Amino acid sequence: MRPATLVRLALAGSRTDTARVVLTALSALLATLAGLAALTVLAIEKPAGDAWVESEQYRNALLREPGLRGGTAFALLMLMIPVLALAGQCARLGAPARDRRLAAIRLAGATPGQVTRLAVLETGMAALLGTLVGLGAYLVGREVLHRPDAQGRLALPTDVLPSPAAVAAVVLGLPVVAALATALMLRTVTMSPLGVSRKAARERGPGPWAGLLIGLGLASFLAVRPATYQLKGRDELLGWLVPLLFAVGALAAMIGVVIGTGWISYHCGRLLRRHARRPAALLAAGRLMADPWAGSRTFAALLAALIFGGGAAAQRAYFATQDQLDREQNRLVGVDAGADPFYLSTMDLVDAAVAVAVLIATGGLIVALVEGIVARRRAYAALVATGVPRATLSRSVAWQALAPAVPAILLALTVGTVLGRGLFAEVSTGVSSTEICDATAALCGDPATREQYTRIVYTPEIQRAVAVPLEQLAWLGAGALAAVLVTVGVGLLFLRASTALDELRMT
Image: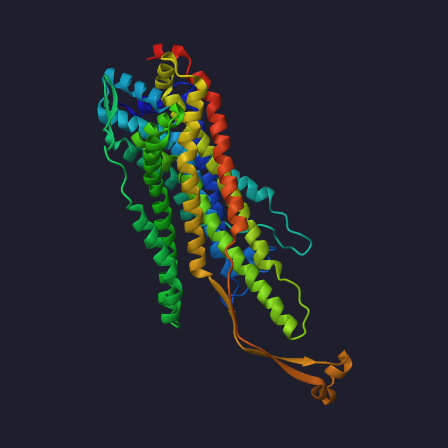
């Protein structure tokens, strides 16, 4: 098959195929913007001299201080996780219709390898279109947002660009990753002229092996502080060991929570089948047990955002406790100093990033639920034809979404909070002494009189445990649950059209 023919067939399809390509391209666009923004932060050049000299050309301390740029870039990269998960959900949109189209192409004489390359090319081209548009939007936005203030300082790092190799890695790497992921998902698919078939699902439910990954992630975070104390002074070793522990711990915990959702879904189905008496709950139980990994696929992006949000809540609680302790120490020595808003205002930006990630994950949830309803429309129509009320099917869809979502949300928030508290469990201050001059500024400024009005105030060592941020965690959980409820509501709008009896005559 000639390349031109492959491209023409990859661009063919129905409106559902067009929607899948557009949503995949949009996801790639958002991921490109997040990746290029992170690379731009890392591309800020350090001033000559001390490695910790601030870059005074920026108004925001997150960009001005070298020690904070790594965390800022990491937060931007974290936004790519829900976006890539959204891309994975969009790639499954209209899968049954695409399978029938691929089977027709096989019937016309194409080989299995050619059909696989066709599916891979469709995803890769959509992702490449999105990354190119994202690159254009980044370059245009860089020119539009380059507005120095009266002091010549910038709100964003629009004066620097990532290296061409880094830009190429993002713009070309994302389509390659998307194409490889498509090829990986098609490894269990057999495309024949008679249709598309997949390997049968496992008979038994998922094992609790995800707990090992979660334990590995927690152990990696808990090992950071002991490693820092034991290797104090060996900066070269700590320079790669600490980031490695962070990366391994976060990735292991995230994968563990996502995989663990499959185990939660299966056992929620078992509990519903054992104790439920209503048809809606029993239908949901059968579906949860038949495909427990659907929960992992559906909630992956949302759970990743909640893990990050739980860790951010723990860090905010640490900064709040530290600020409160500093103000108490200042009052002991007679200094009336207000709160330092820097770290707490920085956490406001992190919370905004978490909110954006949850919003993007909600889009992925909607796509996944609608795709599942549309893919099973003939089964739903058959149930309606046998006398099952549509209201029962609606309640079944709600049970199927909410039953695994609630424990999975609690698990994600718990893991994120424990990861954060593994680093920020307590605040401590050492013994210190401060000279206080109890006189006017003139007497205190005169060396001859200052000494007789000066006293030394000692402040004791204080250790204080950081409180668990229950209120912020409750808001995160409520927001995630609201996202699931909104998703269910949108999915039910498609359920009525998908249960029309005409669907039984569709091929």
